[in-house]
Image 1 (cartoon, helix red, strand yellow):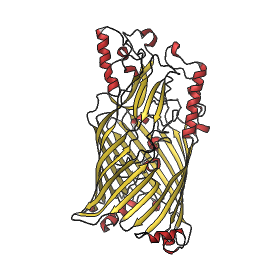
Image 2 (cartoon, one colour):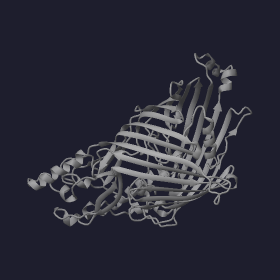
Image 3 (tube, one colour):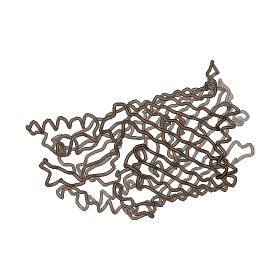
Image 4 (tube, helix red, strand yellow):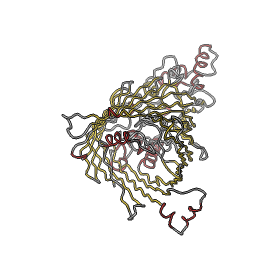
Length: 601
C-alpha cells in the first residue's frame, strides 16, 4: 500500500555528499528493472509493468458497511498492465533531412527532443466471479428500506434500483483502458518544456498529500490500498521549467510552472456504490436519495508555479497554485413533499477551484545518513460540511405553524441551510415544506503541515549485510473557524430515528433514518512509520508499515517482497482498527491479505 518514493528531492547538479546519502537510501529500495532498448543507439526503449493482485478478506463486512460479505471471501482481483514507449529524437533533429530538420532553424538551440507514450489497462474481476453480493447485486435488488410501508418502493422499482447500481459499478469499476501518458519534452539551454498528458508531483511527503494536489486521484480500484503513484489521473498539461543563475545565497535555483486543462476530478467516475472500497456506509442503499456529479467546465484550468532554490545545504521551495481537491463540495436539495424513489433527495457534488499556498524544505544530515523534509500548505476556501443542529423532531414540524415555539425551532434550523448542512432530516420543515429545500455551499481555510525523517541504521544482529531504512512522517491539519458539527461528506451509519413530539412519531419512531456522518475535527494529527531492509542481495525485502491517526485509528501492514528480475512476488496483510473516522478509519472493516505477482522490465 505504501510504496511511495523514498528519494525525496532531485537536483540539476548533485553535490558529492548528497550522492552518498542517495546511494545509501537506494540500498533498500525495491529493485527496478530497466526498459528494453529497441535500437543500437538506445534512442528508443520499451518498458512494461504488469501484475495481478488478489485480496482476501480477513474479517466480516458487516455493521456499517454494505453489502455483507464473510471473512475468507474474495475482496479484489485486480489486474494491471502499463506499456511505456520512449523515443529520443535528438540525433534525428541534428542529422535528418526530414520534417525534424525544421527544429534546426528555430531561433534557439534544441539540446534534447523526445516523447513518451504509455498505455494503461486495469480491471477488477470481483464483479464477474467474486461473491454473490458483488456479482449479482441481489442484496440491492431485494433491499427493503426501513421506512413506513406507505413510502416503500414497489417490487419493480426495487429491482430497477439494484440493476441501476449494478450497471454503473460494472461500467465504472470493471475495466479501464487509456492512453495514459502522451507528452513531448524539449530542452533548450536553461529551459525545459513538457507538453501533453502527464502527471506532476510537488512536495516532499508520501502517501498523504499537501502540496501534491495537482492531479486528481482515482480511488475506484482500491482506495488508498493502492500506491499513490498508481492512483494519479494524468492531465493535459503544459509544464515549463527554467533554470536560474546563482545569485547571492540562492544556488541551483529554478522556476517550475504548469497549466492543466480538462475537467477530470476524483469523484467522476469515483467509487461506485457496490464497491468494497467505498468508505463508511456509502454503499448502504438509500432509495430516497440520489447522487449527482457536477464536474468543472472543460475550459477551467489548474495552474500555478513554484520557485525552488538551495541556500547552502538546504533545498527550499515556495509554491502557489489553483487546483480541484479530491473531496467534493456537496449540497443537498430536498424536494417539496415526501421524498420517494421517484421523487428523490438530490446530493449535488461539485469541485470548486481551490488556491493553495505553500512551501517545502529538505536537507541532509550526512553524519547520520539521514534526510529531513518538511512541507506547509494553506488551503484557501476548501469545501466544508456540517452535520446540522437540531433534531428530526424539530425538522418535522409544520413550517406554516403559528406556534411561537415551532417558529423558534425552524428559525434555528435555518442555519442548516445557510451553513451547508448535508443531513436532510435536520432541515427546517423536512417533508412538509411546499417548496424544495436547498442547502448552501460553504468553505473553510485550513493550515496543513508535515515533517518527515528518512535514515539508515545498521542492526547487525538482525541483518549483518544491509542497513535498515526507516522513514517516518507527522501530519497536522488545522481547520480555521471549523463548525462544532463539521463532518466529512461520508455516511458512516444509520441510527434508529427516535421521535417524541412529532406528529409522525407513530410512523417513523425507531426507523433507521438518522444519518450519521464522519466527524471532522478542527485539529487533526497523523503519524506514519515504515521500516524495511533486504537480504540475499536484495532478492528478499521484508517491511513493516504502521499509521496512527490521533482520533484513535491504527493501520498496520507487514509485507514481504521477493525479487528475481524481471519478476516480483508480494504478500502483505493490511489491518485497520479503531474508531469510524479520521483519514483511515473509514475503511475500518476492510482488513485483507494480498498476494501479488508482477513482472517489470
